Image (cartoon, rainbow, N blue to C red; front, side, top):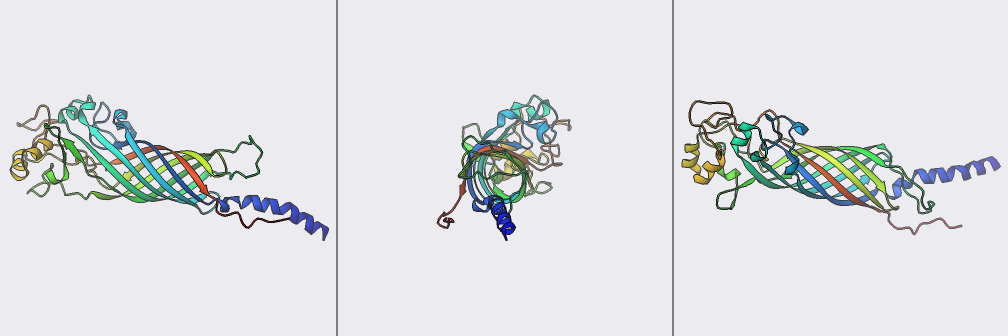
Length: 298
């Protein structure tokens, strides 16, 4: 009997510690950071490539986000994420001749929401209320992925300083005979993938950093994807403003097709890859610990 009692006294603290995560499984987080688009406009000083090889750091813009995390186990969690960001692109920022000559630019706000699954490769340690002051706890490291939706609405600036929504201008000849461009929806699905780091400050509060690349199923976040359409036909159907945004090149070509030219049928965007966007944000999280009424009394 003594052995059973002794074993129980030794085992109870271990079980209690191992179940600490259940008492703090709900968590809210909020923060801000930076966003960048991996699209068709601007980019490195070379022919357009893909992902980080074509990143233009000067086009980095702000983002902000909130979230709610629910732990399924010490290493797994579900997270609801909601964010806002500004994305932009500008061909004049690249020294690559054909892209610079194209002279397209845009900006858009995006609003995104997603459900994400997290898996910790370094498990988070829940800080005890009775931990010794100064005791250190390891960094929590996790990977995440999910499925979400986002809204965008690209626009660009005209000579008069006014910003125009680009989708209604049909800049690649959408809805006109012979155009290979299709009308696109301003609401799209997306797949966020990334890595996160979190460090506890107190039992309830933590600070963290997340980096993600969000893959999308559209190539029109920047309103650029396929080929140039007959500019005169765009002007006749949609007006002078539409014709300008369809081809604002610094030296338009109206003769035989050339590399980097802007004649009908020549390459305006890159259809091989859809657009992606990146978030890097610092966040603060707060664990919802609930009531402590049911404490064991001795």
